[in-house]
Length: 148
Image 1 (cartoon, rainbow, N blue to C red):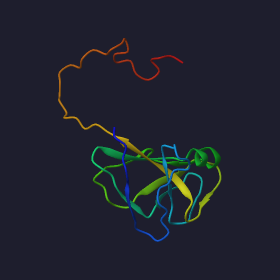
Image 2 (image 1 turned 135 degrees about the vertical axis):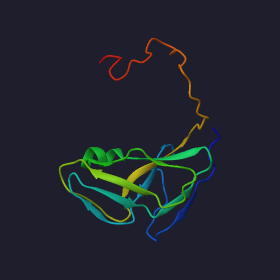
Image 3 (image 1 turned 180 degrees about the vertical axis):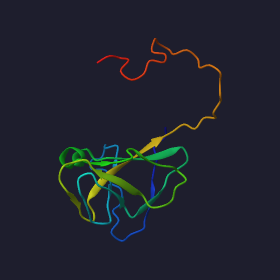
Image 4 (image 1 turned 45 degrees about the vertical axis):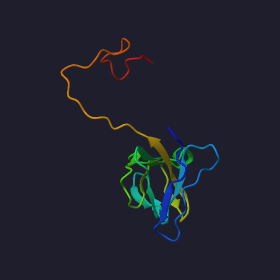
């Protein structure tokens, strides 16, 4: 896939931080909240980023948890990964959940999730009576079929 030269981002809130990578070769772009919040253990919230983006056709955005927040505080994106379709132009918001055992507090500007841009396929759907054989012996074997 040809690299995307630019991603158009619109600030919807004066405190919105543009998506940014922590290091030049990181895959994900950090997303920050524009509202302070506290999440009690077991609680969830919809955290606004104050941003809207214009993804090109054939590219989706996946909103994923930040590993540091997950291990340190038990904070995750509840619907991970959240899917942003290329035709969506509304505000990016993140469904966060506190799976930890202590309250979590975020301030305006804190990084809460990551945005990963991925190409996707959208083939026509064809109903068939039978699927072609598997390229190996797996076939219909599912969860746990490869052993421990």
